[in-house]
Image (cartoon, rainbow, N blue to C red; front, side, top):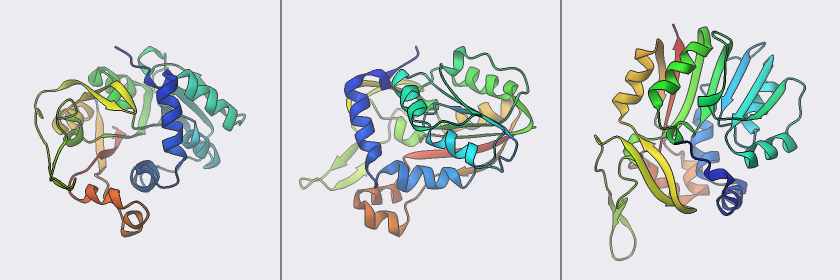
Length: 245
């Protein structure tokens, strides 16, 4: 099932408000670490899967990419991206990657920020990505960490009477599959996979893992957003860079 939660207007408006805050998890934790793994893009062909409002795709153009395509299943996201970013060599398309026809060995760099955990068939996703990448091409993606996704449908943390977190719940880790949760709205669907499934699927499809980051907040980030300090106790995100061999 392909979820299009970002075209739920209640969700989308709340999401835009969340991303508009200067100090949020994306700006302070996920994106700073993600950007450290972006390869040199001069004259490269780039595909950004789940491009959202287009900021990263536009940044790739500014880094010298020959052409960048940003795709997203959400009409809201694509309309916003087109309104914000206009370059001759930047294309935005409303599409699910599962449905997109991508020529074999046509892409130098495929990126995806916090989108793959919405896709049901991870094996087919990575197989298609591997086929689309040129030899020596790079895949860079971030997802919700498997430690965080495993228990989404149940109690997430245990707190004391004052609300302080005593410990985080980790359960159903080996039980892969659909999770539903309340995040801005009810019944947001994500898919849990173990760390071994994520990494072995890359290896099985000819992708050599080059770097893994489980982001930790800096002291500066904690000063700006004190609640982010809990990331020192367990990670929310997993970032992986792999190369087609």
